[in-house]
Length: 109
Image (cartoon, rainbow, N blue to C red; front, side, top):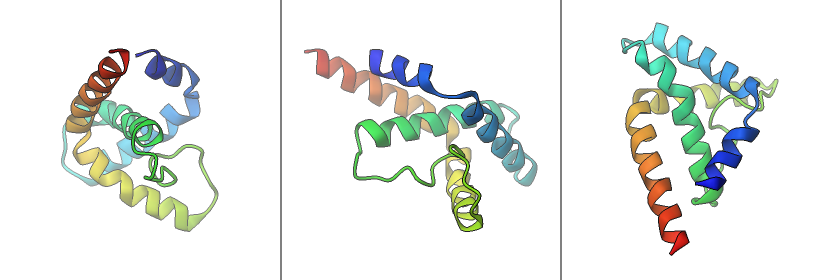
């Protein structure tokens, strides 16, 4: 759990801001609960953490909007990748957190 805490402490405020803006945009474009705006940045964080620490062969270049690149191709792909994360945000947050907890518990043993 210390790895996750260290990762959370290093996440800059721009990450939260950029992904919150994308969450609001997806909220306006789709019919979802307001709760999804709050869950979306955490779901992106969980996906990035899982890919960086457990699924190292999966690239996180297009997951989330941080660091923000001034490239239209990158922005479009990242925006489209964020839609399934937005729709499944609650499931990703719950299952991802459980996966991390189980893996870290196994690592302690």
